[in-house]
Image 1 (tube, rainbow, N blue to C red):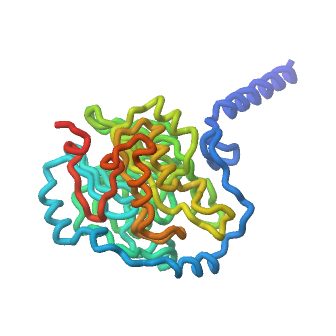
Image 2 (cartoon, rainbow, N blue to C red; image 1 turned 30 degrees about the vertical axis):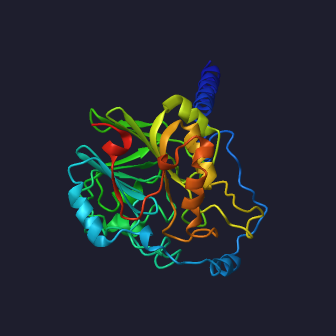
Image 3 (cartoon, rainbow, N blue to C red; image 1 turned 90 degrees about the vertical axis):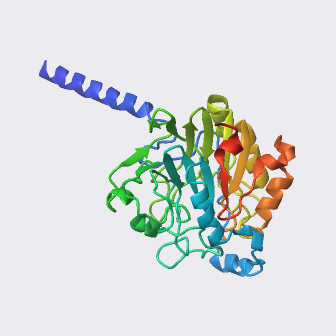
Length: 354
């Protein structure tokens, strides 16, 4: 009898574990790592990365930055004061934006360091942040999309002046904040929702990307997009992403989106990669518009360009292609939006609300 009970307990335990494993979402792998949504394109591994070739090709780029790409510091500080009682967005550079919604001020993927890499390594900025950390307004929400160095900047995280901000970030990244004095740290899985107040809700959504900060941690932390719902308006702040069917699903479930922020740079790695003008994990300008179209987005802002050289397309090519292709994807040219670094814009005017 005791042998039978032992067998029964073992059998039931095994089946409970099996059921629990079966219930894991598709993007959770058994070894604790993560993967992209089902049906996402896969990276071509039939190439060998070469810093020698990359740096050789990089030297061929014209690094001339047009004067109208960056707003003067004097104007930025003036606009910061001018817009302080308004809902606004301001581009600090790369994927760093300040977004003010009512009494809540949000910062996204803040990178204020001179290079995107560990210590003194990694790509160096060719444009400075519009504000420095001492100049930014009081931040209430800190949104982090993933752990790559051009998004998760540990120097910025350590020196950030508002560690009482609520931090929202992907699974398994919380330790980088708790060990640096942040108290309100919220790890999120895809489709998790957090209500900030009766007007503001944040949902973490899938993206087609990956994560890595060292030789041994590939895809050990999650990545994703943030859907910001505020007073009836929907803003999607994109993680770095490639194109994928998941955006049709998101568009059907959460759309229409009023405003989408999406990467339009870092897509050309030819001749290192065997194909030109294409990256599985970064949309080119046309793909970015297609993603926004699939999201049923009314307007779209191109970001993730004009700050670091992460790839080999001309540094000022992304916005030109983005604007010129807008109508092909159903957007008016004025609704495919390009900001200057340091530019402020009224959200109430942009999204037509009071």
